[in-house]
Length: 112
Image (cartoon, rainbow, N blue to C red; front, top):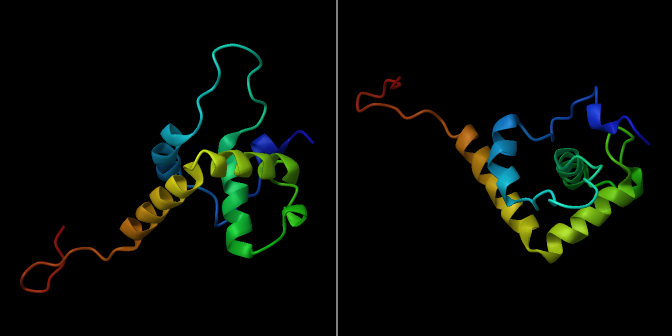
């Protein structure tokens, strides 16, 4: 099951670096003691965005992502901590900001 951390294929639903910068602080921190998590949370969020956009089922998740059981486990954890809605809202805000047309000046010309 290894190899999903360095996915060669990128999807349109994957987080951009800018989105990841804004979302990462909301995620659970790495524990100071014990074993470090083996799962890349960015890959999990990419998988969740892929599932939301395509409407596919958990078991239909492409092999480019972590195993569906891992993605589902993290989804349930994020929902229980009420973080899923926060992450969604931040990503939506960034998408809307990026899609907003550039402001125009009083004469109708674009302002640079």
